[in-house]
Length: 252
Image (cartoon, rainbow, N blue to C red):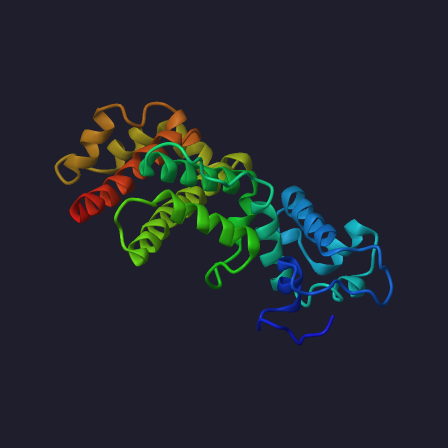
């Protein structure tokens, strides 16, 4: 595929947007960008992001790695396309009904669900602002959720950046804990059932009174505190939305 583009974006990105024709010359004409992206998503889902390579994805398709390069110029491009492909598999359209808070909460929960369904996304470093079709559509939905709030346009953008940053950070923590449990990390196995007990053994109450108060309240008694973090997500998200609500009220 030619590197000359109409938008300055990689040719594969233009192909994803539909502003560039698919390659028609060369071997393996039966391939499409969608097939390549779907294969990459499948490999990542089954083997983790470390298993994704141009060669591995080509093998999944029964093709040669060189045939993939006619559509995607590099692995980095493929990863960006895979993230967009993953978001394309979820319903991200914000309901028209409800308050701005309900809509933005729904938006954050959809993003969390995407990270839980495709946790490998969290292992790909953020290299710039979203520019792919499904990701910009997701951003559009977040901005729509704040319609009618009286916020300036730059404030709407900052607000959804705050929400998505919290969601991604929480999802990463959740994924890390899940992997530790799933991999039967020996340290995790020793610490988790006795976390509160260990805190009290390792820290003197006079030096750590606030931490001991949390332990004495039974906060760490149930293993579910580590296994199911939905409560913590809802609590944190509500506090983030409280801050946005305070800003909206100041505009009123």
